[in-house]
Image 1: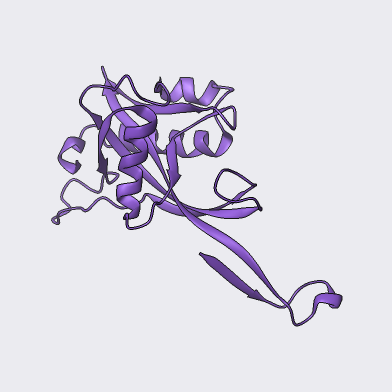
Image 2: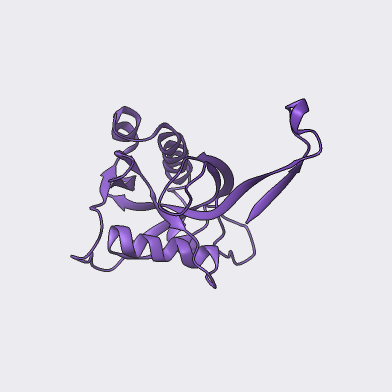
Length: 181
C-alpha cells in the first residue's frame, strides 16, 4: 500500500509526488499467569538481533488478526487466543479481540522491501494454548515485570509496551481476565 504525499521540501522537486510504502504488520505479545503474577513472552529476532514480540507481514487475503495468530504459530510454535485487555468487571458487552493499538513504525530495507518504508503495526495481546511445536522459528522467553524492566536484549519500544501490558493485567488480576479470552 502506498501513501501519496503531494509536494516536496526541496524547491527543485516542487510539484513532484513522493511515495511512502506502508506495509501492514501484526505484532503479538504472549501473556500468561505464572503463580501469582503475569509474565510476557517474547522471541529473539535473528535478523535484527534483539528480543521482540512475534510478528510479521500480513499476507494477501488474510485479516490482520489472522496474521497475528499465524505469526505466533510460525515463530513461537504455539496456537494462541487473541485477547482484549481487561475492561471494568461490570462491562456488559462481549468483547471481540482487536489490536491493542496501531502504530506507524519506520522500517529500513528488509526481505519484503528494498527501500525504507513504514510498518503499520497492529499490536495484539494473546494467551498461548496447547503444546509448543518443535518446528518453531524461535523459543519463547518469558519475563516478569522486573525482568523485562532490566533486560538489555529487549527492544525499547517492546519493553515500554510489555511493561504497560503487564501492569494492566496485574491491576486487573482480581477480576476474571480469562473470561476475556
